[in-house]
Image (cartoon, rainbow, N blue to C red; front, side, top):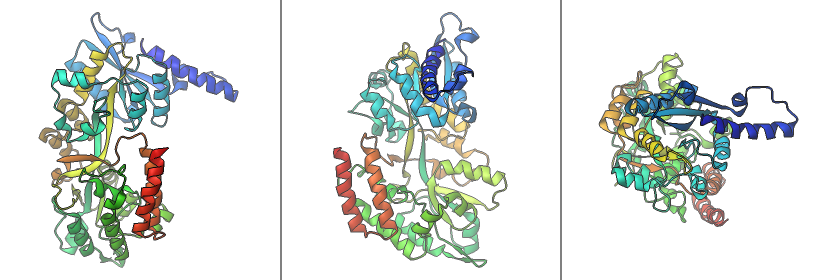
Length: 441
């Protein structure tokens, strides 16, 4: 079996680590390595003429979309068997690094958990340039709403967007009804959002209700500044962030949002703030939809909630949003690259997107058919369909080898600005200087 080479590589890593710690190896080799093979495989009797491909995934037991994708692909491609290489989520990046460093042909298809890691994979020659396949098969990259182009490196396409999450606006319908104010529109500017939040700031049953809630992530300021697609967090001058910091501080000073320092010190999660009805709105990623659906079903809260498109700056069309993607690639050492590409092509097509949507996972494609499937998720608000339609998709942070270092210094200055330790101009000046140093290392 192809999987045996993968297990052997990870077993060797486990053996070395255990030896260094003076441990004994008495358990099953694959259990020790944290890897499991699932799906039709050689051990199940691959018929003559069939080709087998392996696909690396994480936490497959809790992620049914991976197996569903493999089964849908095999149904359409009966001459190809798919074997899932399941690795624990918290060990995925490290163990995938070990596998690829061994120049093995497995896994043939690579799910990339963190988009930034595709940079080192490309630099080490570990992932295949898909540009010729895309040209040969006439793949239209516009179906990904700009996400595919943002994954390109040196003008070449080494990965395609598999799934994605983007920012939308959640709101408490019951609080809006109680205040007699119309629900947030699906085409609203950030200025209109601020005014609506002011109206929705009031006292209910002796408790303060904030008009909206901004979590402590830097993204809750910087995302709106890069929403236009013209600026990124790798820009040399961060003055474009100033209007959004001014708005955040203005809302904080007016008591429209909770105090940043208090949230930071108390480590308060946005889920509790929204579910305990301490705020009327909260801008957050589409991953929050599953949380609300599950928590409402579990009885953690009983109010009616809604979701719509994230607000936008003037001049930017409604449906423009910010988020992140899970890319998928082909192992440059794969001994069946054509079949591996066929899997990638299917998984990133509208048919593959429908498989993800049917498993309550947000795909990188949001055609009307896909949106209808997502909107049919049990517990999803009937009037929330607009939030699922994306017109333009911008990465919250670009795919760049220096992004992690730059992000760290920007986050530190973000904290200083939001707690009042620095004024906005000083904080931005420090961002410019410190980010330049981080980029030059």
